Image: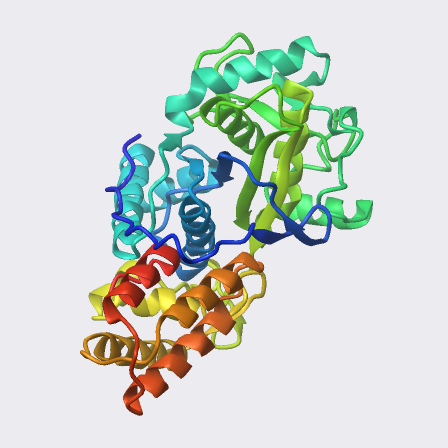
Length: 413
């Protein structure tokens, strides 16, 4: 599937030191330094295209854009893959509700998403893969699981035995009761009669009446959620058998920790014999005016609507960087108003001939990013530089700072 247009990234002057990137790893429960490598493999779970890009999506993809940018700035190659879950129950349900073809609905929302990512200045993945186009890859992976004896049938549906993975549950750190509760809330079927284990994951759903299906040796149907990401990541990231891990970073929102990332990792281990990800990185959730932001409450804030209202996309980036990426954010009108004002102040400061010293600020941005993407501290440092510039401090190079803000933070000013 076609990604969105590539993004120009200015080169960072070699005099700025870039430390090894450290990130909070959900699996280990601590901030972990990535090893120095010439190539990093990054997989970020994409949207299910039945609604436009909301601020929760934006927060997630901006987090991984910062990681992508930093790794590139170190001189490393980043192999970045993102999927699109363009066949799933929510998509079919929304299409039926609205009386439209599910394919048309998916395409319209994918187009909106591409536009939003372009506006937000997000670097596109090299491989942007829809489940529908990857069906053969997915069914081939299921056959590998079947040959390994990790699957069984229930009424023509195929399930994966999660307990074949000796580390199942160690990435999400939930007890069985919590796993069962969350599994039921997020698309699982723990109470289904005939399953060997309540947490076993559906990997092939036989075709239901009035639903699409694809041919396979298991019969006509469609894949389960978790095997899709396992198969796409392993194929398109071109894993190395010589590494201890298949990929370096598995990313997404914190709502994907369980069951999705736990089960994708488990199935990937069964497919390769390698541990899946070196680091599991998760961004926090975004709420609105004191409430959880959700489709059921009808209080989603969409990126495209904010931009249509005249909100600067760089102000959206700025507002989302004002909190630590792992923590949840409560969005409100004051937040974006302040971001708009501060972005305008930054633009005006950068337009001056004489500005406050910039080298120290750029180095601070590099250092703070390396420490688990400490963007709140970065914004404080930038505000201090703006104040110093407005007070008449000189000795800096506005052009160099502008380029660095683009390169490292994606702020195209």
